[in-house]
Length: 191
Image (cartoon, rainbow, N blue to C red; front, side):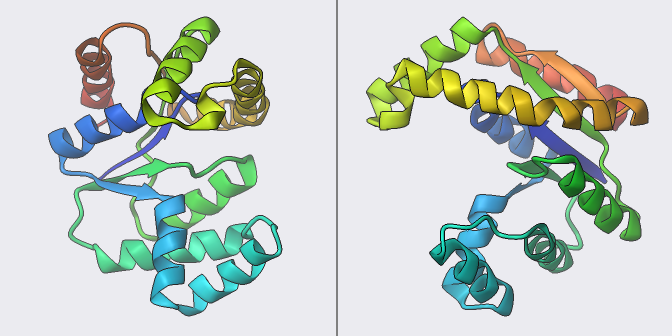
């Protein structure tokens, strides 16, 4: 089973490359944001618990998110693998995810981190903002803050996966096809 944590700063192209990986390898996209919305709209116990935190403007506790991931894994046992998107964001979350996946005998195969120069990220996000109308993609100060927050929170995760031999930095500069080719090359080594 191929389990990938897809990482990269805002504007790195994670969404675009996730689509390529899903199509190329038959993986299931596991977005914690999508899971939260799905569980809440279905009115599940976990969804209701998550909603109670979100209604107060609080972060949903890790154990609830892990419970949702476990629930999803249990419903798609025939999966070839998963792309984890938006999770883990902290070392504690990575440890909890590892425990869950290791108990299932399906550990993380690798953390693929798209690395893009800061000015290119800003340019991509501003361009995306003009097309999408997203306000947070049009203000360079907000974009810089998002990138800085990402850098502060992600570094410990890189250091968590590196000693396990699961961290793979991938040059996220160039065309979509070039980046996809680099991802495919790395996956060929970890499959």
